[in-house]
Amino acid sequence: MANLKEVRNRIASVGSTMQITSAMKMVSASKLRRAQNSVVSLRPYSKLLSNIISNIMDDTIELMDSPYGRNTKIDNILIIVLTSNKGLCGGFNSNIIKEVKKRIDSICIEDKYVKVDLISCGKKSSEFFTKLKGCDVIKTIDSIWDDLSFENSNKIANQVMDLFVSGQYDRVEIIYNKFKNATTQIISHEDFLPINSLTNIQDKTINNYYIFEPSKEEIIQNIIPQALKIQMFRCLLDSFAAEHGARMTAMHKATDNAQGLLKELKLSYNKARQAAITNEIIEISSGAEALNG
Image 1 (cartoon, rainbow, N blue to C red):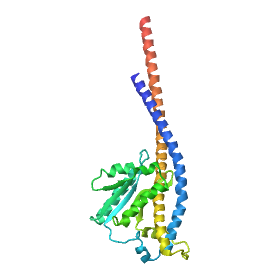
Image 2 (cartoon, one colour):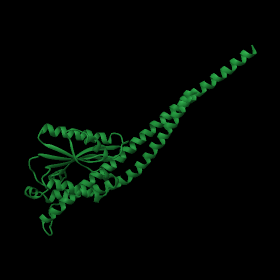
Image 3 (cartoon, rainbow, N blue to C red):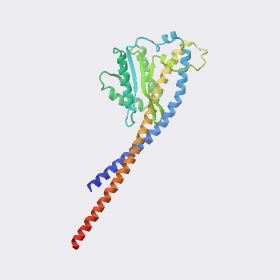
Image 4 (tube, rainbow, N blue to C red):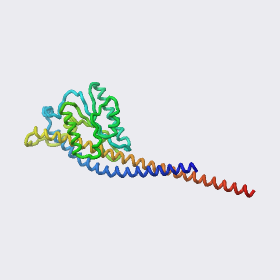
């Protein structure tokens, strides 16, 4: 009977776990729907803004004059790492951490004198890289995922732009999971600064005959920071949607596995229970025959 009690406890434990994973799946599905709508709505605007910059900034001199377009020797690189605050989302966090480590190693191979610092957005990357030797995390912004908004994203973008303009860093990169669909996340590596990254990645499909008012220089001066802020917000939204997609998929698989395990445990329990009943019947019959004999 001790064996039966152990199986019953396992059945209860697996059943409770299945309820938790099923609830987490539904919560992530609800959050994913909102996040997906946000990122899908922002992408066309972000692409159009990048295309406009690509058309109006077709002069190398203009690019060099911009404080966000310096093209100097690369001595200091800043990498912005986007992970989640919570786990239970498959390889969502581990894949980004591996990609960042791979990127740092490749930079060191190219030039061992280049210094690489990190800004971590997400507890999972913060916990890992703050303990990693030879890697400096200058700032952790884990709270961004608790209230992801354009205003909070702007704070990060402004801080990063100030670090670049002041000359503290010569290049800024973002590594994150790009949302494709609920089951697929693409590890993405984007150049954030200098600004020439924005003018090269997009096709020039827009008519470049513009009338500038008040002046081209003033418009460029105002539109570039706006484009950088949009890019930062888009990356954050992509990562947020990808996280919930990954968690929903992981919890769906966990629920299915729990159902399969529960079925096996119930079958095992019924077999053990039937064997115990059969043994009791045999013992009673043997005792009765012994008394009659």
